[in-house]
Amino acid sequence: MKNYVIIIIGSILLTGCEQVSKSVKETFEPTEDSTVQHKKDEKIPVSAPNSYSPEVEKQIEEAQRLVNTMLEKHTKTQNDTYTEGKNTGFLTNENKLKNAEEALRKLPQYAGKEINIYYTMYFYDNGSILVMLQHPTNPDYIDNYEYKDGKWSEPRPEQISVRDDIQSRLVPLDKMDFANVAKAADLYSQKIAQIEGAKPLTSIYISIANNKIRWFPASINGSRERHSIELNQNGTLKKFERE
Image 1: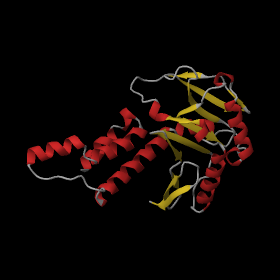
Image 2: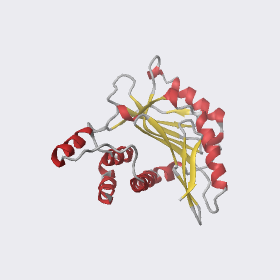
Image 3: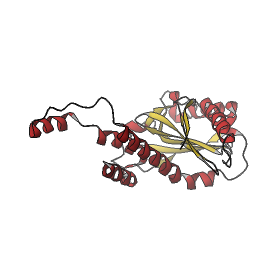
Image 4: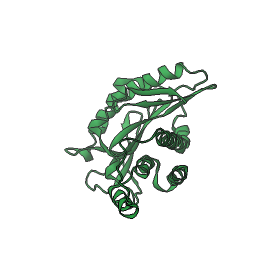
């Protein structure tokens, strides 16, 4: 069983972190076809388990933690670049965040059209935002936008592979209230204050998989301990525990 987890984790570099979580579940959950074949070959009645065994659940959780860690490391260089400069308290300023969202909604190319966020969105305490959006007229295209000094940039094309499942990585802007970033930032800061040696929050980002939002960072590292943290879609606390 452990070999399955190792193979899946190794596929991260080829398939992307957000797909691995789904792969983990699918690996341990028998399909209808495989169950039927087993009955035919072995002549032994087989029924799908109602839940995963504690050992398998533990392996899935460990694989998910590794996925989270690799995704955070993957974005570290980008974060280091955009967190340089003066922090303005942007992450906890609900009014400024709402202004950024309103300005995004007013982009002329999206007039009368739905705005869909693709894959990731980064918020930095220096007042910057990076986001990828589905093209307003060609759903197979993705564009990059940057929010800086209170204005959104012109779109820059993102290169997309035919293997990228665009539809599963989309979330409507209507489901991503920028005010929730302030809620999440306040929550992160509270938890960071409880952990000795943890660094102050300078950025928050979301990742989209299966049309659902996941908040990052997914862990808080201190000098003596490490905690995993998981938020609900609206930025409220779902889980916080020591690892």
